[in-house]
Length: 444
Image (tube, rainbow, N blue to C red; front, side, top):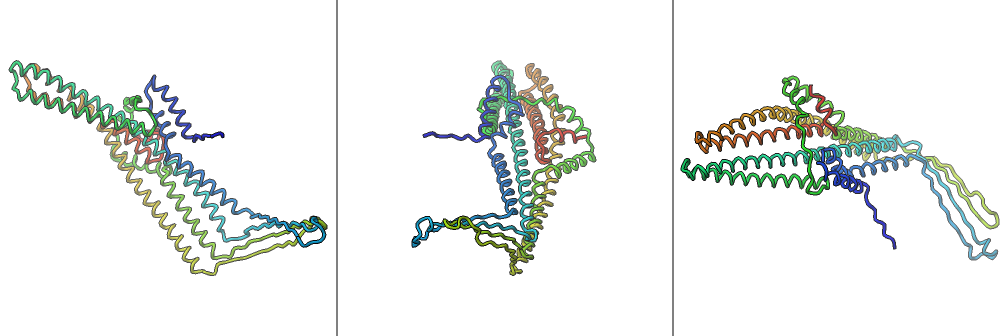
């Protein structure tokens, strides 16, 4: 007995991509494009959305077939067991062919057919929305790992500085230059920096696990770092924006979202479907007319094949429960009004999110420059205080404060850079795009 194992195409695609990435990752780090491809190939949510598209398309075809003539056939055989003319004469057969076609239904089937077409479009927009969302999640997870790694490096640098101060403090306390309390402070702060490094490493492990779960990567993957210099021109343009330009930028993104956001497209399609539901409900006010054709055939041993009875019919039907029809129409109109409200509220909500997103983008972009300057100044100050501490011209508290300034400024710069990337990603998802080019090009 043969056993046939079927592998789903998305799973096979993900496996092929993983195989290629695994061989490549041994030589070079993974870039963002590779992580995106893996996330799309591994997303069960996206696959379900694609299956929903296929299901909607099949339903639309079924609705189209419902408008075609209905054809049926009936076949029967008989045996007259009391016949004395032999078996051949006792056997008989008959067949009947029927064809019916709705001639007029007040637009009911047409409304259902148009509604099914809109359902296909809605499913496609929903799938596109899932795809954009998965790409946004992949970007966020990618940046989260890089940010966590940068924080680990920062925490390691803080620990190295704390150990350097501890070593100097140990030599000074042994020679009686500083008090034992200053040395104990250095010991305590070095231990605190070790704890911070441990926490940073745990955060990095969590971020890596999240990305691995999303893409199917092994835990030992290496990511290509972000070349932040690529954004220097964009940051310069953002820093030059005035209040009017900032408002115009939010309006530009809002206009892009109204034409490209999958959720807004879904609201529009839902409103149009609701109007078609009203048309379908109103069709019950008029009769439905159906034309039919019926033709019978018979087969006998003596007379062979012959035509049986045939008929042509024209049938009209209509529900006289007008109160039920009126109630159905009112209910459909209520649903249509509700769909319109959902769409209007969706536009307002998206506009607000875009305004918040633009503010986050501008804030993060401008924080990068100030954080970079703060880091530069704090590092210069730290070097000066360190030299003075070695010469006993500064206290251990002064050096501790200088170290804290460097740590805070470095953490601030890391946060500002990745907050900027995350803001770009969030705006891209809100607008409904898969790449950042149009988001960046909209900034004057």
